[in-house]
Image 1 (cartoon, rainbow, N blue to C red):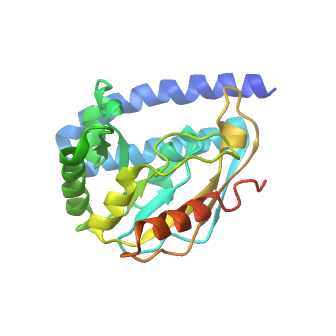
Image 2 (cartoon, rainbow, N blue to C red):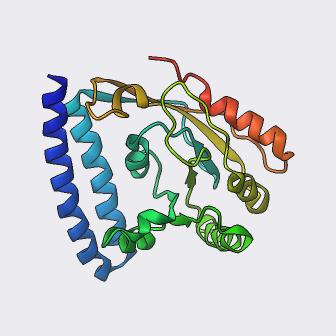
Image 3 (spheres, rainbow, N blue to C red):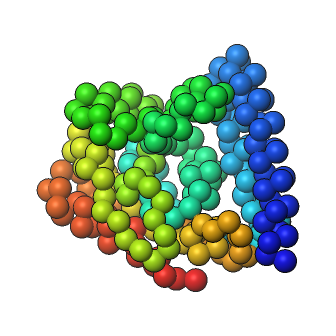
Length: 228
């Protein structure tokens, strides 16, 4: 049954995704609001498919802070990456630069407000990213990042990327750490029914020493990661 559900999910969600990318490209002619509407619908469509095809429910503990902040998410699967426009209000999402090379999708992503993360390209790339993040934060949009830089199997740990500390220092925004529980049900090819849990932690004030900030973020995003 798990395999059958997963196959149906892949067929429905990814065919729908192709159609929505085409729609998003067309909507780009109408401006960012139209692109936002399509992206939000796509994210919500994914959650509906996960709920009614895969049997995956979503539970949110705590609430996003309303002030501009840098939301630091634990990253276990693609679920949370797709779910961000549903979970947060019009978030600015830091994403791997390689993703923007996807035909069609990359253009739409930039228009929505995703920011490319260029690993290994040094200070110039970081300055460009900071400039873009400041411009987006000035509009009041929340910033969302996966500080581990890549998906990490459920229950395992990974060091925070150095660029995350640079963002924290130069943006001067509080960090809201978010612990998740998605990998146990969604990470593998054959998805399992269960509950995806987000836990919003207490904001971490700006201006802390790097070591202290990283210690607190790492502890907070791992909190509850073994919960069912």
